[in-house]
Image 1 (cartoon, rainbow, N blue to C red):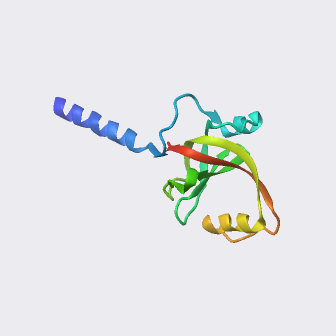
Image 2 (cartoon, one colour):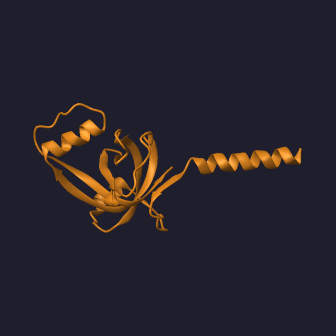
Length: 139
């Protein structure tokens, strides 16, 4: 009976650990803030930001969209040094990077639409929040 209990606890520990995956550099210690809070703070310093993943590039996982309420930011990965699994959405994540506002040309915005598996729809430039992350933890 004790062997079954130990085996069960070991398997339960493995399942919990399998749900979290890290990509890029090690995540710095400290607490994270929600994406909406980061936008309101308007700081361009690198920080830990959390939110829901609502979209991932379906070609190679080279970007994802992090959402918190009505706010969203496109997350790319420093120097394209790592990608995230294409099936990461829906899910939660913490990213480490600087939040900025960026204007995309219609061509750039449509490129992201195609990579996300959608039809192009932009005829003018689009302004969006973006984060270039050095570390991502998928929860």
